[in-house]
Length: 203
Image (cartoon, rainbow, N blue to C red; front, side, top):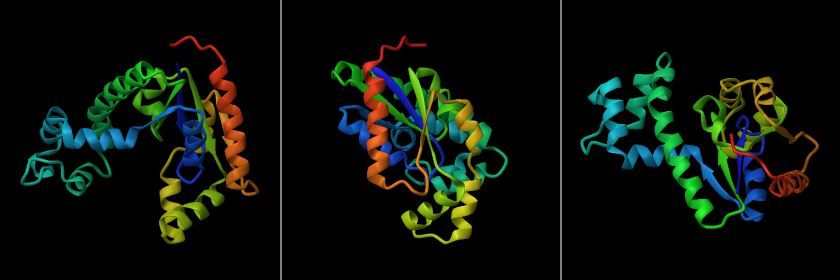
């Protein structure tokens, strides 16, 4: 089974690329969804976060209040938060990859903006970044999320620059201004179809 890491900034078109992978039979693992499930289900993670950021991040039922956690973390303690949460996410993603392999899936795709920084990239056979020009991404974010240009621009600029993704990827899928969603989907399917035929040696 091939493990493919999918990363890239918001608004670039990762969802379309991931849908192309699903159509090829791949199991898609959303690292952000994994994180939020762990917050709900993993008492050990909640205890570690409360120890680091104070019991005020927990609500009356002992669950993490995400707004309170964000207030405690930003702007200066994000590396500390990541240092606590990333190992839990990596462990759970590893379990999901093993489950996909047992189920006979041809591939598992890890969807994560912080694929490289979290260490998840080390579990991948190949890393693909989905990229698009900044102004194109801003327009897509505005249309997708119903937000104004200023907010969309701040969100886009808060993420890693394009050069970072290019430097840490084996392949890049470009999704430019002139690309229709269908054209991009076809191009993504062609790339992924080829990758599934290759034989990778796991790191």
